[in-house]
Length: 328
Length: 119
Image (cartoon, rainbow over all chains, first blue to last red):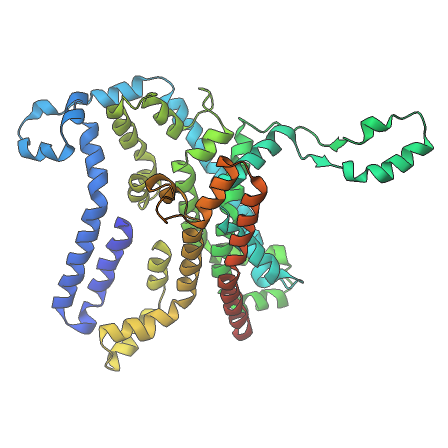
């Protein structure tokens, strides 16, 4: 939010000469500043809490430090020291990147191909297909967890007992086969994707794809058709048009979706907990933080420090993230 | 919000200036020039927000648990599935939600068709 509002200030600065009303400009500035402040309050509170003693956090609110700013004894770095020494924190950070980077690249790759197909290739039923893909956004991912978990554990199982009539007729021709076995036949092979990085990548890809296809379809569909037509006249096939024209032209949309998806995966707790588990070797940062907190939430002071140190990555990668990770 | 912001920045500066030279006030520039030219982004944000609101469940679940007439459709689906273990009923509600977004998607498709007709 902070980032969104900052450019607005710049735009209004740019239009100042055109209108010549400095009064309205100040109104805009005050409103923007108020929004920024409101959005920063929780983040600042978290940062201040992370620098205070556990006892002080439990007894007084973080805003009380403003009453005694001169007292340097109330600040401490022990929370950060404890978090970083707690073991496995660096490993968890690495695991987060291992999860987040492929889980950002995979949906963008697939979705940009799909968006190109939906907007520039003419095939039967593409509107229906598009509606189905995007309408799948409406199903909350929580209801998909159990089926996907079963799929990962057992592989694609297909109950073919409804075919037992035909099978029975067949096996009657071969009288040695026992009929009782045939009726419960399931076709399947074990995927064993639970607790693997591939499993969590695929889960994030699946959950991110509808939104990605929708956003990219909207952008790629609005590219000028003259460019694509002239490339077609010059003899470029679909793949060449996609790699040489569509991808370079849609970099802004790709980048904005990459930021969305990366932040979503970076902040995600539920999907990683279900598909990756809490084992020390493959737990990610959010799960490590949850374990730091303790079973009864008694180590709140560590949570604030861990949370604050988590920001360094999104801050480095993109500016909108500081607001989002504090809001999450 | 990010989408709308980037769309507004994508509006070419010269048509804004042309409107201002013609004597449009800043509010008129916004409603008559900027909003029509970012209409596609507005529809995108509208669609995603409608879908997000339709499937909101965690906030309701945590705050009121669907008590006192605050139950929403996604929360009812989750409750049927996981609390009552009635997967068929939960799936039926999911299908119902799927049908509920079709009008919004129809709006989108109509806009895509119009866009493709003029390009």
